[in-house]
Structures are given as C-alpha cells and as structure tokens.
Length: 355
Image 1: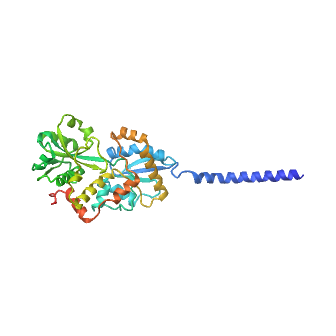
Image 2 (image 1 turned 60 degrees about the vertical axis):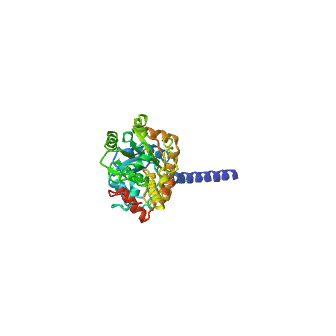
Image 3 (image 1 turned 45 degrees about the vertical axis):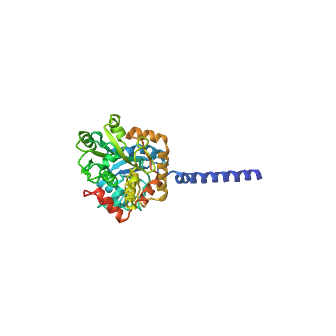
C-alpha cells in the first residue's frame, strides 16, 4: 500500500512537472528567439537606384542577412534628394527607431552638416554612423604629356594651367583647387561642366591641361599610363596612412603644408572622403539593436567572401570602414569657423584665398 501511494505521488509530481514544462517552454522559446527573426529590415538609400552607391550596398546586404541574428529579409527603398539630405533627415526625424529601418548615404551628408548647408535637419553627433563598405581613395594630380609639364617643378613654374572638373563644388573640383593652392601654382584656371568621360576626352584633346583623378584611372584609363599620355605630379591619400602601391613614389600633398590652418583644411577634406557611403541609424534606436547592426557590419567586413562579392558587384576592391573608425572620422573633423569658411572658398566659384 505504501509503495502504491509513493508511486502515485511520484507519478503526480512528474505530471505536474511535465505540465509546467509545456506551459513555460513556449515562453522561453519566444524570449530566446532573435529580434530580427521573421522580420523585414528596410535600407533607405539617399540616392537614386542603379549607381555605384546602390551597388556598394547591394554587395553588403547578403552578409548583413547572414550575420544579423534571425536573418531578416532586407529590402531597398530609395529617397533621392539634396545629396542625401532628404534620406538623412528622414532617418533622423521620421523613421521608427525600432531597428527595422536603417539608412545609407553618401559622404556629402557629413560635409553638408559641417559646412552649414541649407536643408540639414540632422545632428551628426546624435545620429549613429556605423560603417561604410569603402573609405580609401587616392587622388592624383596629372597633366597631359603634350602640355609639356613633365615635372612638378615645371608645373609650378607655369602660369594659367587649366584644370577640368565636373562642376563647382564637386569633390574633384574642390581637391584640384586645394592642390593648386598648396603647390603655389600661378593663376590656375577652372574649366567645369564635364562628365567624367567628357573631361577625359577634353584632356587628351588639349582643351584642358590638368585634372585630379581618383585611383580608378588604373581601371578607367589604364592606357594613359601604358602609352605615356600623362604625367603624374602629386597625390593625396585617404586615409593618410595608406600608401598606394602604384603611386607611392609621388610626393604627398601634405609635404607642401605650411601652417595649422592648411593642415586643418586637408584633414577636413580627408575626413569628408574617408566616411565613404556610411550606414546610419535613427538616434533613438535601442542600444542592443544598434550593437546588433554594428556587429553584423564588423563580421561582414572581415568575411573574405564579402571581398569577392564586392569585386563582382561593384568592380573594385572594398576598403571597409568599421563603426568605430566611422565615428572617429566624424569626431575628428575640424569644425571651427575659420576652417569651415576656408573650405567653402575651395568648394565655391570665387578666387583662391591668399596663403
């Protein structure tokens, strides 16, 4: 009789424990399920579809899906306007900070804020910038061989060298004027209104004498080097520490800087470019979800398959910027009024300032 009662108590206890397990297990599973599981994450682009910025993001997306716990579906939305300002304003002010909307914009978003351009409704210091698939660029000052400026000394002795660029305020326009200023060129002239292919043709036709090109000329205009159609004179590396294997012999423009004022100008240009195409997040997004996105980008940028995918999709090598490096580039930007006003003179249409 005693054994029967014991077995009954044990059986009853087991049944009770089983019932508790059945009730509790679903709640435990729900608590442990990743936030992003079964959800859709939207990336808002500050650009139109189809350009290089779009391709760079698309190369990252499969790895974001891979490394975000829960592997969410990722969709693309495009919000062109104001050089990325429209999308940045949306992410900062309107997007729900639930972790399901992130942005990707061009570096102009940062320049516009620092330079006080109209239409900026976001605060760089409150909006998380969490990494970019590319950051490294080398800008090379080159002249047409037939122009006769074979050496940097000859270029500096010449007068009225004609620099071709896309438009006033474009990156290539601004850096060409910075080169001319720091190299103390005599009465350089700006010729604008070109697309990149038109500018290249104008150079070879002798309609302009000089351009500043990024290092993609090794792909886009490799025959210029192979056929000795151009002379290379100086370089600015972004970031400064990264030397280009093909152009390491060229003098770095930093060697011509004579003052702290000029050093800050170069730092401002470098850090504007260094930020690449950053991913941005709503400022009120929960910290744990911010960290999820950051960690997914860190892992993506360490994945060797990402490098292969990026080359296939974009046609160039990536130069990833980690969340920490992205934040530092913005934090280290000179923001004093003197530096801002000086930079605006190079991005504007007026004459170069005195040194």
